[in-house]
Length: 389
Image (cartoon, rainbow, N blue to C red; front, top):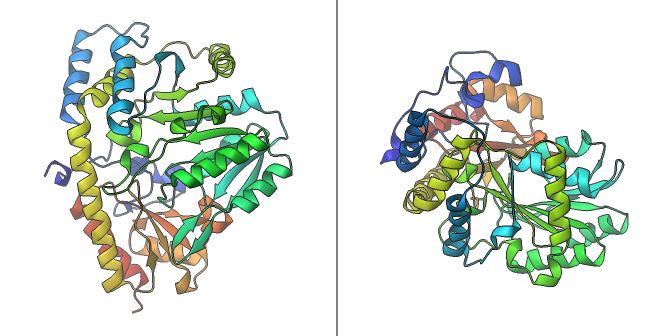
């Protein structure tokens, strides 16, 4: 199995493996990083070959999206989700987060409230607060380990004057894939209160076998006028540093204003290697992705079985999408600092739940996008960290 291959990422400029000291103030040669949400897998072979050919060409002048790039995106949405897009709807940006930040600058004013679900991706808070907007948390409901939307509280947020909602679908860190009914309810509330709906769908391609993803792009046309959908091939195919994202906007005036915002920031040319990688991945990557999702599902099942038999004090609901495990450690009755110290003593670096908001306190996030041998090593360390002597 190609995903079992161990690839040493140390000294490759990897954020996850090489920058724990700078980013987390952690030192130690034996630390096992399971935090940053990228793969320890190689990209698809066809993508690597296409990049090698592009590099061999040797000329790296200004690059633009060609017909092949656009068609690859259109065909991907048609084949994977039976959604028919128009080329004109696609605005490309150097990453989802930069695009969301630009959208907030365009659509809202300093001091405006921006809603996010919590626990939620910490970088949403960053782009909101650093752009002088105000984070409004809409806490998710949790029952028997399953998360759901609190639509009554969301409406309250809108009634208090929130101007935009960053909606993570599928959700990071919980792995929830929102149902068509949930998505429709959110969009209807946004329309009722004239709130901009920014749907971050970067995890959509990693919906697990047997689960159905519902994109905001499939909403009725009357609910699409205040909608921007963000997607990318980066999470799907392990191309996180070859950044190019697509912001899909059906409303012509809104799209024109967003394109003007890109021009205002000089974002009018693209990385030729990013274009090459994304195009090739969309055109050829479906079989690779199918194998990957089966592998990730096995990792999820392995983790669930291990917790059930070895660490029953933890609670784990398998993600419906993505390769991130959201582990509930609250039964240990440890502070977040004490929990982190026990993990570090065992040589484990997880994402601590408190980084996802107050609702994440007592949780840890574990990256399952790794070879099975690495996961087994992490699980044994986790048992050492949490089992009383």
